[in-house]
Image (tube, rainbow, N blue to C red; front, top):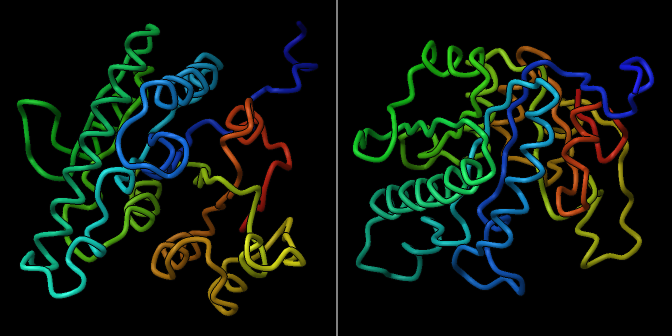
Length: 246
């Protein structure tokens, strides 16, 4: 196929993909790691990587443990401790994704914000960029390494550190809505928003600090449904598969 006529020709050179922990979980909202779901994600990532895109993946851990929920309701677990436990959950997902990718011949490196050299490299910005330049998929786990900071904020921070062209926010819905579409079937889906609109209208996309980090350098965010087969490729190609925030 002539490269100029390739409908999935990448628009972006370097991408940060934010994957929530729920993407790794079994169907039906149950906790745990589904091998089938993890392999499906890996296969989608492989197709993007095969087109020469430099790809870093920020991992959530909600399928295993959410720090805020675990420490609620008078728990003996302190909130900061619960957040650290949530960071460890992201490393577990990262290890699963790493093995899934390597099982289909994708070179990877797992980097974590919390030091644990026996299973992953520490996150060092220059090292992460070098891995990307060498054609390795970089998996980023452990959030920012600090409690009380969401993995959405970690994704925005890493996207800026790694000088990404776009931050892809992979979800189970097909974009940003005026209200929760599961509650209000008449909710309006936006095709395009500004960072300022998202913050002003408190739209439930990412937390405000993550949006503000992207706003400062005009880093675009694409919110899309990665459960639809091929959507990660379409997103990287610049297709209108969700809501673009810029």
